[in-house]
Length: 254
Image (cartoon, rainbow, N blue to C red; front, side, top):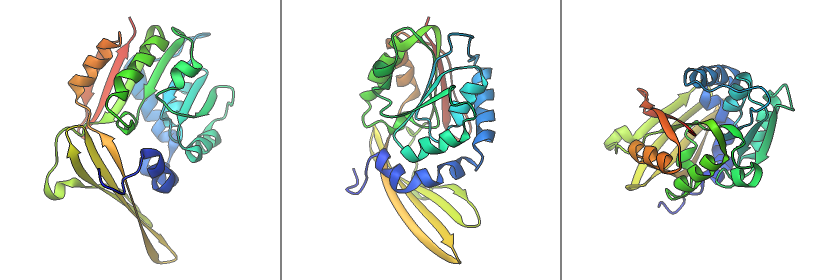
């Protein structure tokens, strides 16, 4: 691993959390509308009196708001960034519907949910590749399988980094505006890990400032993830990729 590459938590605290919503497009509610439509198309909806959901890696709240709009309550919104959790709270009109948790997505389910009581778990927006080790994924899926009620849903969206880009294709523009420009560079370390180097330029009073930070992400083969879901007792109903390389996996507990 690159010597100065930190954890994803450090990376977000140093660089990305401040600009996270801008990276998504600037309007959390518009993103929430799109996420709610995606979940609804997959058949994910809350039920009266039994609608607890977990948003693992909630960020500034797009998926959390989507779950609330689909009828889930309460939604347990989990993230390692206090800044993003504070931003989420500013977007939530009903404080009873959402419970922000500053914590680790790997341990929050066994710590806070009784087995067989959760209606839905989402881990979206490329959160899963942030886990420190590939071995963390089967363990997390095991927690999901035990927490979900019969018929409960798991939805994961993540970027497929298994195909190695070459040369200048490794430089990827993320978003640009009049006063901000974010580009990332991918450095492939081994078959399981890629180091993401984010380069952010911001302009204040006509002067540009450069910030850089790096962190590792997991390369997750879709077929491997499907098999790990099955091993956790989950039935995979949907697994596909869009033109941008973002995969969507939907599984249910039989």
